[in-house]
Length: 247
Image (cartoon, rainbow, N blue to C red):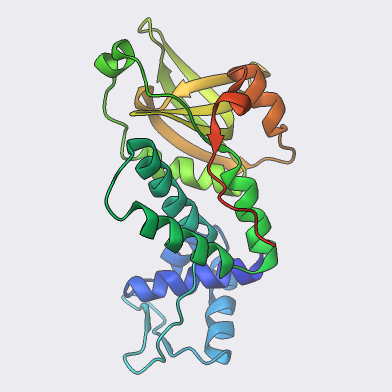
């Protein structure tokens, strides 16, 4: 994450409510010293921020701080894009066109660099045909703890470890690179490169438990290669929800 993106995320955290420097450092995956430096930079930019040092101290936006202009993080637009994808898959849903218009405007509000980052992420989200009755009948709930871990690994290029139970009930432990996300409504799948087996794999999200985010990966496997190996024909038969390319 570059400095501008990190400070924008910090501003988002502060607008959610009071927090602490250690919590900020954990959320942004930086040292507390860097967190203090970012807070100082935001103050210099004109944002009213109170920071009380010592035990029991905290960080908060001052009540008279200027209103924050609407500004989207890439991860927020990815979430909006997924919502639009689900609306499209459902068909004939009220306000679906309004949601698509909001998605398009939010994408255009990004800088050129963030637009490119967003396009790279959205190309890796595919929507296929609905799941068959057998899969629907066996589908369980997705572990709520998986979602923030997956989002971080998917957007930041980190490895992810977890326990997995396959369709035969056999448990295994996995360490993967999150390459793509596939929806066969209502089932979600992670298209991955298994780092221990050195091979492409596809994991159903409701069968994943105890996920942990690992360190950033030095090298990433090409999306097209992994997707074709894990689910042949995916790019030809599934639609990537990237919207209209930006000029």
